[in-house]
Length: 236
Ligand SMILES: *Cc1c(COP(=O)(O)O)cnc(C)c1O
Image 1: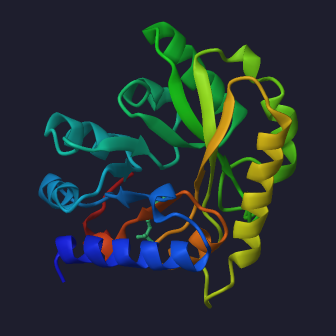
Image 2: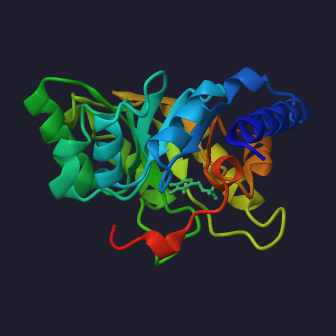
């Protein structure tokens, strides 16, 4: 199947999953996870109606920006970001979805101040408490958000999570529900500089379940572009 056909099929699945959950399909944004796919593939996805691309390596982001690969769509950063690379990302993407530590948030804030801009971000939650993954613990989020007035050039627009790889359908439902509850709790508390509009969760294998549990942004790679060829990767 072509990229165009894949995007159309995913759109239908989004609509079905949203309606089944009593939600408006327009509430859900499809973010194409474009890692390891070249500019031509990205352009085809955008022609097929993708309005948002997520990149997870700085080097690839920089290369594809130079090729104007994302023209017609927003670009988000969705991978682990090292503090020494924030200059190449802040101001270049409309949303950094993967802020996984207060140390990184500080570095992003300093760079946003330096550029005189406001950077939109999501906080990444390590919802499965996995040692192999970075991210905030759900429990530390309320205390952390209470100090957001210290970062006037940062606007927190929501939460993001990558739950454990699921073996069986339904495996991650409890994690998706915990994320949804956390997002609702934060909205109720009304912190400065915090607007809980986005709940980014759900990938190729589990996005319909994520939508059933309130996801407003799904990040899809494989189901759009096909399996990635990791044999070509030399570094990150
Ligand atoms: C690659 C990637 C995805 C998409 O994963 P698929 O299973 O290929 O859909 C989503 N989120 C992040 C952060 C990724 O790096």
